Image (cartoon, rainbow, N blue to C red; front, side, top):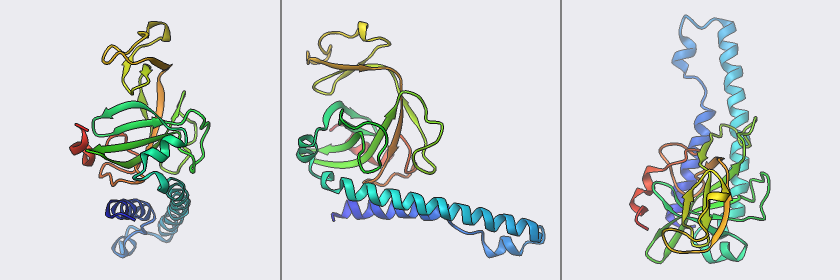
Length: 213
């Protein structure tokens, strides 16, 4: 595994472990902690530990399933992923597999890549929803949004509230129209690149150096 992937793995495991951290001995020794509150703290810690275990298990499944794509965009394309955005600052290039439906942690709908020169590095995986899920697919998951837009085959896109308003060709490049979507709720998981803003944050300041492609 490459050094970047090892760093990313450490970041993910540390995030998951932090959710399970027990209260400090100093806090438990505090006079304000009665037996009842101490029990409550322990129950909360146990609950966090259980949530953390679920998240770690799901992330491990996701990593095993997507490891083949980490530095191999060609393979991702062969498996059906097509470009839908060029570089979005502090995020990446987005590649969608239109055959992926619903949520399966082993089959992300979108792969988010960083690009430099001739090299491509998978940074995050992503799922999108027409409405915000009542229950997060992964423990602790957070959602962003992506406004309604017209997408073109080369990854350019134009914000538009209706498909009827979509230009037949990309205003930027002349590329052929591909599809339109309404407002979407997005769930990013920075599975292969560390993110100080959090595992589920939409933006990642550490990928800013790649903003120019």
